[in-house]
Length: 516
Image (cartoon, helix red, strand yellow):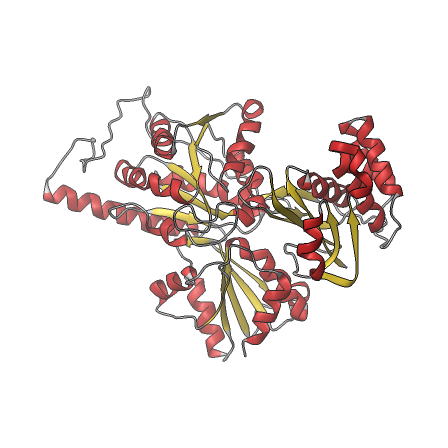
């Protein structure tokens, strides 16, 4: 069972509240949901919408065709009525206009009734908003007739965004201070950490700009703090000189980079995977770094923890790569995160010893040098450290393979495309559920260092005369280019989307099946 329901209206009307209430009720009834948010860069007005996918099995994508529309204005009907399936339903807000700010709660109630869920779970969810909200929910519930019958399932499901996952991973790692400057879609991590700082006894500091944020993070780390900074697009461009400072000083640094469609200001509130290249190469000079790209909210917890661990263990730059679809998508999961890694600071810090560091090339005591032999030794030391990092990363899941391990055809992707790829493969031949389909999916989690297993899987597929298919949300296939650089293998079959929107699962299924 799968349903796709669009909730649309103007910015400021409370669209997110409708999907939040409904998905919370559904999760407590044992149903998986995935919530996709689509909105322009406007505080008020414009056209915003969420698509809420509902299933009795794990889901992480939305379809282009809709089972229902909740319209908070006329524009939503005009824009989306042609996407409604033949037997789809529509709920209009006109009959609830007198409810004012509780209109969205009434609409949530109407949808709960259509889904065939009892009223009490709805009342339990909106009770925190007060008596007027309860009345609005009851009015909405009584206004519609039951269309589906979603019986309660025995599943323990948690809903989390990618941003919440990154924040939780940082807290689990014992973060001491986060420096940030608002920039969509990285800002939600700033907000999440700010909401957790008092309870977990760390600091969130709003810097005057991105240059200040990253340099402050390095300074705090030098003093012995577990520090982190985050940004997007142009803000990351401003940080790149400080990344090279990290490479020279070898002060641990964790950076969260949430991509937006670019270049320049780009399309701030939409999603693309077009910052992989800059994550891999930003900064001048040659120095080691780690780049990790989680694919769902639970992986965001785990991989952020690994980023902190690796950064402190090797005094290295560690980066977590995301985008708006992952950062703001609401994922339902019944999987618990892996055991948290203990992040320890074992280096000398000021107060415990005299500690010198230097942005200039320097000797082992931190003294500036221009001696040829020392320059050579320090360069080789940085390269050797990267080899040690690669060895340590093999402890973790650098890649994951889903579906039939012996399937003839191989799909390769990374980051936020993960859950849509899984849903698309499963809709073709149920291969993810059964492990017997014609496709397997190789998810790349570590982009630097890159796993040697990728080459082996590609060569195995080519030897069996199967298809290797690259799927990315960018224009040039940046992961494909990285694989070619590291292995010499060029992936010819590519499915790329670069309009600022994520893949729809039915769209992706069709594109996969076109490749013969």
